[in-house]
Length: 387
Image 1 (cartoon, rainbow, N blue to C red):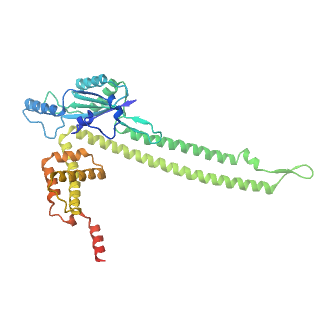
Image 2: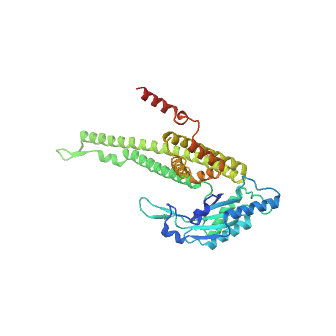
Image 3: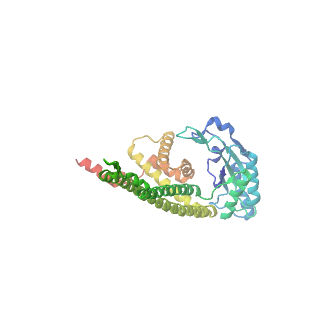
């Protein structure tokens, strides 16, 4: 079984999820007792300590865009122990200065196979780590070979096979399809060659019809022989045309799959480069994060404006009504646009953004119906009205 480890910026709700502080729809409650947890310190307290140490060590505040605490998801086996994971944490600290202070083993997540109805568990562990360099007080700086080292240490400590780097799994699946198509093509080509050889082989002799004449001698029956050959050629021609079409189709599929593999290779390399920059350049990470949150905010604003246009007479002076309506709008935006709800939570933790959005819902703005409904829809409504 293969394992992998991938660190990302810690989420706001990590402790709630990792330590099962509330129930989730996608877990099996009957398996939750099999989970294991270990905590040295809470995330909020750890961040305070990191900020204080940075100020003490460097004389400066920790950069606003820094990611001093990160979280990894580790693929494990059913029998992986907390001791093995703590040994991994020790090796990460010794060799890469990464200090893990929370571990959660999850054995209650997975899915039910649609065909077999069999439960397919997703055994994994969450490692939350302190990313501060104790020598400088700043965040650790790792290169690509360090992330490769993480994979090696994980496989070694958990006694598992090392996972394939990048998105090779997806590429391997496509390359496997190519191999299958090439094998199918080979079978077709062999079948095609066999058929051609059969036409000129001994089998063709079976098409010749000889009958005894009135003297008892074997004579060629021309009519029946010609009829047999015509029938055989019609059959062969039909099969050859069918195989030819199938050969061309298989060849085309192979070319398309190879093109897709090349595209995926470029995509994987692009993601690797971007991921490396995001992990090592706090400013780039902050910029990408801001762009994403701004785009989510714009979608929220548009839906809020549309909601006010649809229901202008709702009494929004009561805070509970306002909060409930905002929650429904946010949930609708997340579902329709495939946005994680944590992103919306993060938007509302920014007091300025939150106040602006609630004010927009409560009091509206000078924006009219034309700002909300696309121009084409406006024209349709005008035409309908004029009728």
